[in-house]
Length: 290
Image (cartoon, rainbow, N blue to C red; front, top):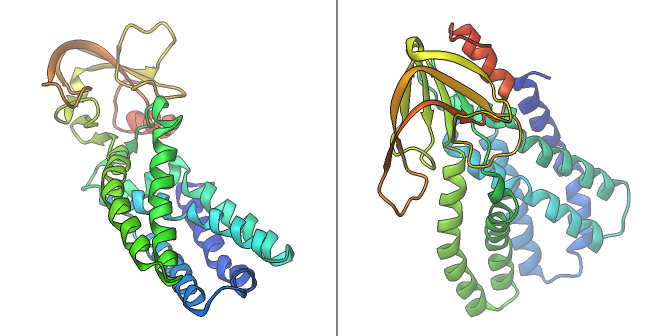
């Protein structure tokens, strides 16, 4: 499928959710109090409407919101299926919400979002998240955000106003840090511009690092014994090695609490989330690819 085909597939799957979700959640909430039912249905429709609106607007600033909200539908579908009688509607809801969540996490969908904010003849290729963050910090940040979105309104609707407000206060303070951290991961790009390429990664470099096409000797898939400076942050999967004709000064900022460290490099490794797009774009812009 093409990059645009995936976002179209997501829209189609997301549009199907209310057809199954209404009967499932109506049954699951039938034994709850009226305030809880009303709050739940308002929240469900808000979640669905916000995601639908976001998936129509390609913007790098919306990617984090999109990837936080969409997987919540799977959690809600599981809960609704458990609370209601398992049937065709609940199975369909589980399948369609899982498909939507899976598509939302695809690199091609991230590519579509971040290039909605690109300027002129510029192509941004997202970089893969650091491997260690996938093993705990990223899932924990999402759980914190999801819990803060789901539980406080329901706690307040059930009559525990003080507990709900306390949950909101603590949750929002923690969520501000979690959301900002997740947003930083979506703003790590390898940017192809007419002059060459730019490494835009605040987790690695203090300032965007521009390399002109004339300074690039090779752009290739990295091998295991590469001697290039590793800027992948232990990302999983294939990496790209960029070899320069001459050494260049790079201001490294891997430790945010320490001052930038100036390093002289003649090659470095990066980890685009879609290696094929990075290679094809380099060829299109006459960057030497080997």
